[in-house]
Length: 515
Image (cartoon, rainbow, N blue to C red; front, side, top):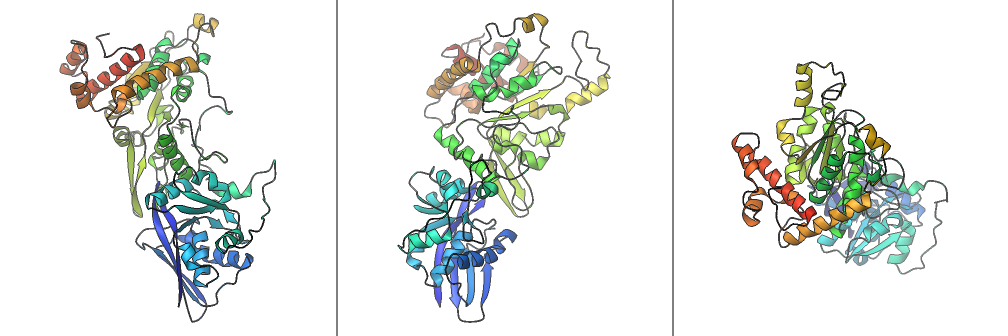
């Protein structure tokens, strides 16, 4: 009996489980059995691995072969186990030294010609391997930069199984021709992007590398101020106004006001987009906050996560540490909108399916935009709204009270006056100018919150705000009166307090005053 084992990683959402890949050869009729709860794509690896080994110049063992994936209770899927299965088989056949394979983690798909193709989710897989104590990882050459983002792990990027065999046996490493040709799409990167996702980093923004600038917005001084407060404290914001007033323009400029992601946040965002297949090719690390703007017809699964089998990350997870913008929010399904209540409160979403349950990060800044009525002209001067009062009430009721109670800022966006359009561009602040004030306000808040688990004002629980950091005497008198009259809930009072602290940080004050 011949036996060898190596390791790979199974992803459950954005969390990884190290899987031991064991290969056992016994005398008998040549057969290949794969056990350990594999899915369809993993079962097909038997044919890929056999062809790849043969085309790499190695001999396929003509014995009874059993490959086990342990722990057997964890569902396993995808083609990322191919490389580990091939090396475990070659170790059992004594083509490779089994002792050299024990402490290696291998992640990669094999082509029939033996080339190692990259797979999605390399970053969270390597993070899981590092947390389990492994320090040597083998991946496809195209994803070596992404795997190298994990500190303390030695990464070997290979182009083919032939190269890996040479490295493990101390033989001369053969040169492999790169199939990539300048000016043509790289075929090896095709598996890294899921076609039809459309809600990746920057989805919904105008095309091009340049972010929209706040100086493009004419007028709207109150809405611009609200946008600055939202970015400084990471407060959720709701724009209500007639069509053409600039609601979408304002929301598109919100990501540019946010500070760059910290190294920890970058790894979290990159891991989510790597699993979802929305990581741009050639961009191993996401450095700026993502922006997702799904259509108002988005389904529950596309927004919070789902799909057949184990669910994939939805828009709320793709907007992690960034902005989720829902335009025409009143046209969205009420059931879909209410599904946002859990991630808005907790910063994560738990998706349960028959195949399993997973926890996905979802700490995003929500921006909503809606018209005041179905025709959009209610309340405007000379608008000529002909909507019935009952229609207006039904339209506004689509945004439920519990959802809106979690939105810190609600802004009425009025149509731009002719004088403001004529004076467009004169003295309008740019995104860079406002972003600098946002950065200073966030630094002031971070200094105050040092030693706590929170980084921005919107994350601080109301009890802590009321007891640990005091406001000026009498500063909350008006808000407390509204609470007694039933105009504010307890959560609403906490929301007022959080926004007040952000306004104080922007103004450079030590604590909020009545103003």
